[in-house]
Amino acid sequence: MQQTEQTVYQDASRSVDERVQDLLAQMTLAEKIGQMTQVEKNSITPEEVTQYFIGSILSGGGGNPTPNNVHEWRKMVLSFMDASLQTRLGIPMIYGVDAVHGHSNVVGAVIFPHNVGLGATRDADLVERVAQVTASEVLATNVHWDFAPAVSVPQDVRWGRSYEGFSENTELVTEMGVAYLRGLQCKNEHGEWVLASVKHFAGDGGTEWDSRKDMPYSSSTNWQAASLNWRIDQGDTRVDEATLRKIHLAPYKQTIDAGAENIMVSFSSWNGLKMHAHEYLLTQVIKGEWGFEGFLVSDWMAIDQISEDYYEAVTTSINAGLDMIMVPFDHKKFITTLTEAVQKGDVTQERIDDAVSRILRSKFNLGLFEQPITNESHVEAFGSDAHRALAREAVQKSLVLLKNDGVLPLPKSANVALAGLPADDIGFACGGWTIDWQGKPGPITPGASLFEGLQIQLDEGVVYSKDGDFGAKADISVVVIAELPYAEGEGDRADLTLSEADQALIKKVRGQCDKLVLVIYSGRTLVITPVVDLCDAIVAAWLPGTEANAIADVLVGNVPFTGKSAYTWYKSMDQLPLSNLQASGEDPLYPFGHGLTY
Ligand code: BGC
Ligand code: BGC
Image (tube, rainbow, N blue to C red; front, side):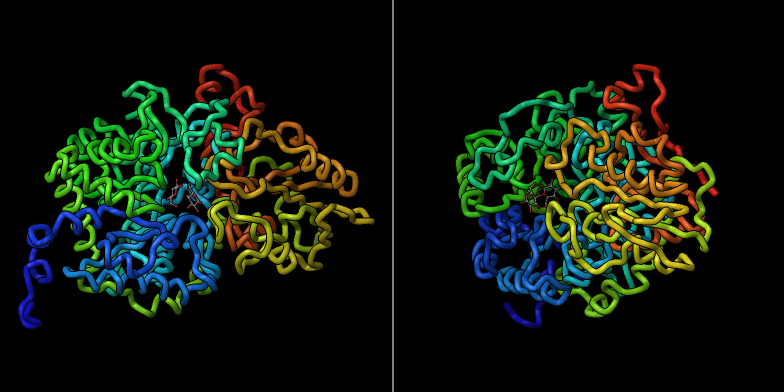
């Protein structure tokens, strides 16, 4: 090819459609199938990316380089990008991550509240700004694709992914989901933006509790088999079509109208049929009825659940409408299988061309052919004070004051005793999907705890004992309890009643203070009925992230409480799921929208 002559697809002055058509016409079947293949970063080398024309690489939760920092991330992604640019046609790969509350895999990133907290802010403008800052931190690592926002509408908080949903209410989810999408996809001053993946289509928040013991995976990389949790995650949503559309599909239609170009399909099923095999919803509804021109990506090894016969799993999912497959481990097997299916006519050449056109369109829209590497200046802003200030605002606005007999705001001169391990633990404040897939307690990444915040905000500071052993009586005690971090089905729980240990801590501290303020770190509403009367004030802080010190700003009254719970607080487990409560006509402990103020 002559250096001076650009072919049509390389010419940025041509329309995206012209470029896609020109490029597609030059591609071999192997190059096309490569574009449809998404591989986990530890399962492939840059050399193989060139060899197999791989279209996309991802980091799963905890898929981090060593050492885990912004510079190393940037280099890691660059090595895959370079490899893709060395292919015959030089088609850039696209790298995907789960930056689901900030760039949450990367040490030093600003970690925002999980969506359960953002929903409580009821502030779409704030959520858009949060997503914009997240995009900037994602771009700092050379990444252009974020598997967010989740627009799940969790109907049963026993689900371990409840915190990924902004609310149990579809309108609120839609409003926040659209805002988040706008923030990620907003073009910055360098013309860059981050492709959002709206997930998980559809009905992931509507699955039914199931005491099944047999897990759907039968592979050797079966992390589920070890765990007996997974009782509702990846399950079956059993509702009629009108209900599915009203509760679960609405956010997708609205985000598509707002510019979504990518949707991730759900592990779950609708009335027994796996979403990854659902031709009606994937092709007829999304691409047909809604006119979606973007591409559909599968979830992690999810097509393997369609059938034990991999050939059937591949043909069924591609024919149902999946455009890119998150393989994620064995790309050779996927490529061989899909190639064979095309050769045998079980997947048509048109279906392949349609899938590849959709993927290429986003790559052209993103400007990857012109600018495969992001602007270096994002690195400097990564984890900056300005970004942390926004997270602090998000935490302040996410807090929900469930109960207050007047003890809050804390007088600055008060003698305050603080109890509970999570009060000075960033890992608890961040929850799952932070540094590691499941998250974990401890100083996992830089941040400021509630303890640090109270030390600064109160005149006399605060006495802290994680076990609540104070020796002397305090005017006011603040007790912080938390759910242990979890992600996905690992967090499925049959019983959300506060643990015996948490109840015991509250009772112990109750005996050593005049007034007791309970602060709860949780990914969902819990059953707190047994302790409500022991507390003079109760604050739901959700999973606040690295700027947990912001809770102190509100406790002392520098900033008012404005958050409104985006989920119902149940009196007892019998009231769950939401449909049960609604059918019973009973009152919950605190309804959706509850939130006191001062
Ligand atoms: C990965 C996650 C992925 C999960 C499957 C984990 O091993 O780290 O990113 O989501 O497997 O659900
Ligand atoms: C999760 C997705 C995630 C993907 C990649 C899956 O297990 O369900 O939400 O985007 O892994 O980490």
